[in-house]
Image (cartoon, rainbow, N blue to C red):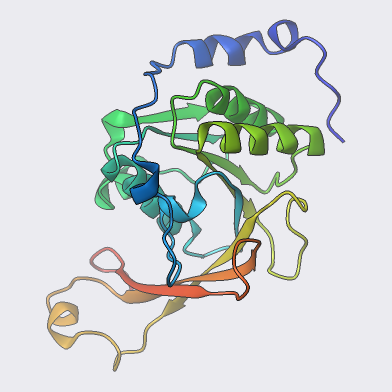
Amino acid sequence: MQPAVRDRGEQLPALREQLLRCELRPAPLRHLGALRSQPGPPSWTLAELLGRLVELSSQRASAALSLALRVVHDAQRQGEQAAWVGGRASTFYPPDAAELGVDLAALVVVRLPRDGEIALAGEWLARSGSFGLVVLDLTRWGAVPMALQSRLLAQAQKHDLAVLCLTEKASSAASLSSLVSLRAEARLRRRTTAEQDAGQAAAGAGASFECELAVLKDKRRSRLWSQVEVARGTPGLR
């Protein structure tokens, strides 16, 4: 269990200094009626995640990074500022993000020496009200104290932002807590030769894969749902 933090400024000075150096802009005015998820089939977009504490879990060789970056890209398309907070084992890789259309110059990336500080840093960023999306790359750490989860959820609801937690665990494992409003698992399947487009495969576009988002819990919907998209690996990937 993580020890209680009595004086954040005293115990985490380096973290505070790093966050204060981030250039935060006032949150833009949002047309909430248009941005919020409308009735109909759900989809993995920022609109679906706003105001929620979300967990995207995966195991090794999954599509979690691609799916998380899809939401970052969607947030930027909506004119929202996004932040990615991780530790030394963070899965964030700038070339992949740029390949998926993410504007790296507009993305706040915070890397911390200790995994236990990731969620705390995310709370400080969320509290600023300058972000529409905060991604917490918890990787194998995958533990956030309940009190801190409560504060993250409160900030998500207060500022109408999405807090997306990335964890490494099997679908049978419990979620972070009951405060998680939406939990999904990222899955990756290599497509067979027959399923691949012959023309693109012959051109050396790389193997193709199916990135599946399987929702395991959704408090806002009566039924679980899933989403599948096709992605291509780099040329030469077999």
